[in-house]
Length: 304
Image 1 (tube, helix red, strand yellow):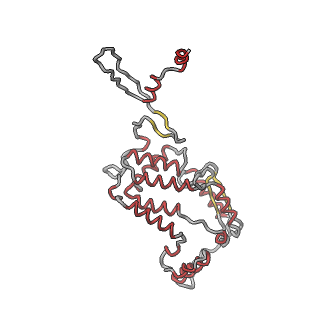
Image 2 (cartoon, one colour):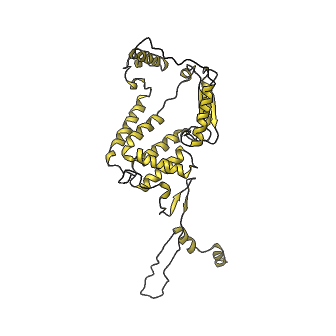
Image 3 (cartoon, helix red, strand yellow):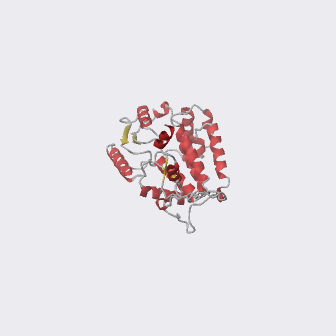
């Protein structure tokens, strides 16, 4: 598996579990996983409530097709060749999260090094401790805004008067297609329809087919999918207000721990030959097992 192939696998698993959630608990579980994947493991509880409530309202399983389209654009991007990056001559600012797992810092550094003709050199700024989604956490978004304003403020002032182009839109788009065909060394692109955005797609046919097949699959049964909203069209509850009914719940490190241990009660044993002993077990299984296992010290005495 390549270094970032796990990111694509994780996105696919999240999308599949999101689409096939059968109840509120299942949807909340995958939404929590998405919070950790996008924002980071140490997501603020209030922010987590807001994100999950937004996803329940704007991106429920019944609207999964739109989510799948967005995800396809994200994971099926093609890397620009060095020759194309060398054509960029405008000033470039790269802002990156230091703790981003989906896009490690070294990839931003590599991109900056390949923008060899950017005016003044590409400026790469790293936000310490930030994850990949810089616009979600308020502190990171504020710092991102400040860095952008400072970058723009150092650029030379130019006039804002609009100048009408010498050719119409069709001719300009036709020229753009010709340029693209030369950059990717594919002469067939120049003959495509300049009015269609899909004409500028440089994805290989295999990726296009894979993406179309995936969207077709997610389209099946979409209108009968589960909805996490209540009768009033609002989220049924906050994620933090849920009741933990399971013996085990997943933690930040992916492990599970027992929660809410309860008293263990066993029916008193009888020695009557007509009575079959039927112990009644209540409470946490971990507590039951711990109370019934013979201590190691007692086993040692029996062996001796």
